[in-house]
Image (cartoon, rainbow, N blue to C red; front, side, top):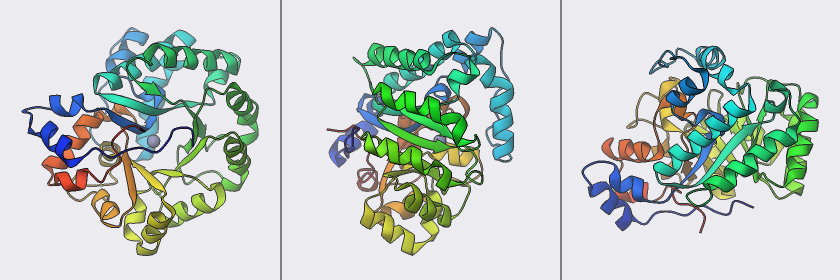
Length: 319
Ligand SMILES: [Zn+2]
């Protein structure tokens, strides 16, 4: 796998970081964010700057996935419709992560972007390569190809082939409403990505049940699942994930904001770790959920997760 395996931060270092009065200790630890979407990683203020006007604050809890999508479409997407806007947002997101001590990030770039801004895929790919080089002294960005499952795959294929051919991308992900789309129609994307050595990821088990995680593993042969929290209620699936070494890239603030979990104390992460599943973290959409990786670790600890459990999470960048 191009990204390499994540590492775990030793208990002693975590304990030392948590002993600091605020989150300064956690921010100083080099961390890995392996579930985030590059354009939704910037502070909301970066969107306001691009658009030239103020935006309504996102609600702390969305009533459902539809309300979440509506907020994105009405308020944020207009800022992503030019190359300059896109560059400003990608850059602000990467800077924010670097400020939070993220040393390695798998952040996705949506295949639809070139179509939305009426440029060739190569223009977006070049922008990604430039911003990756710009942030490289502070953060290793492993760009990820983002596939929207609600878009007919044949529409995305030419852009996908160009992205793969560029050699700029290290992984692929499939997202948006997991109730839509037929995974078998997207399987050829995953086969091609595998042939080129990319890490295979897909969102599953976020709003759907464990059967969607099983199907995703069977049909797409993924290395990692984004979210996958529905596995926590299925003992057989937990065993399978642990045995297979499938990594679940969790995003807790996202789960809370979308009403999929009621709090850090009761979040499925506890059951997943207890079952021996590989767990890593991500911020998903910082612009909307407002929690960085240091915030997530601190909140978990304050909710009662001992350092010995935190040390089981794959929080560190690849060696
Ligand atoms: Zn996500």
